[in-house]
Length: 222
Ligand SMILES: [Zn+2]
Image (cartoon, rainbow, N blue to C red; front, side):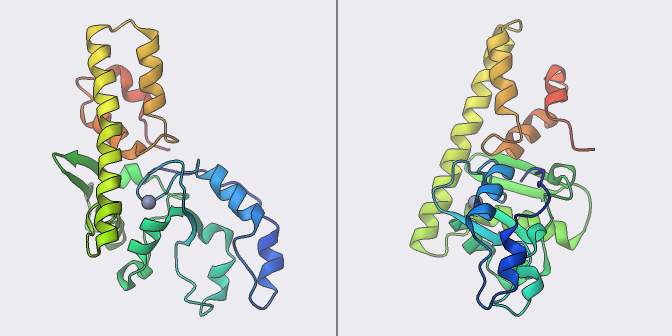
């Protein structure tokens, strides 16, 4: 999960649809804008180029029990179907971090260890942050159905593949510190727009002594 710059004003259809009985929050303008603003990445797991994107409500509208949430542009997020499903639990209805308003990298650590994803809260006992970390962990580990075992494993496999790309380029940089091509590739791998960016950026930040020249590419949002 990384910081996302949401664009304004809200897509026009939202105000129109809010007036209708059975109005929709997923008209073309909303889809186009979310896809662009979120760089076609699931805001929860970080997977890119989604094939099954969902318009996700940060705070649920519960089939119209909270109509003000249903068409609120700032409550609409771009998520993969897997993460939308994992998040559909009472515990997460209390709210998770809003990555359009706060930089998740300031509050959470993202780590891949062996065959495990570990996301934890940097230094606080803030319940909202704990819920956010728990949700991201679950999107890689909640194997309560056959399909979820597959979709979790698939995310972990793609995350490890992306981390290996980074490790390989860091190794190349170590051997050839003046290569502009390598540096450009690393910069691109560390952009917030890239797949699983939070994990790669956190790795570089945690190895600041080894990679001082890369710290400017993983700076936190101010
Ligand atoms: Zn996802």
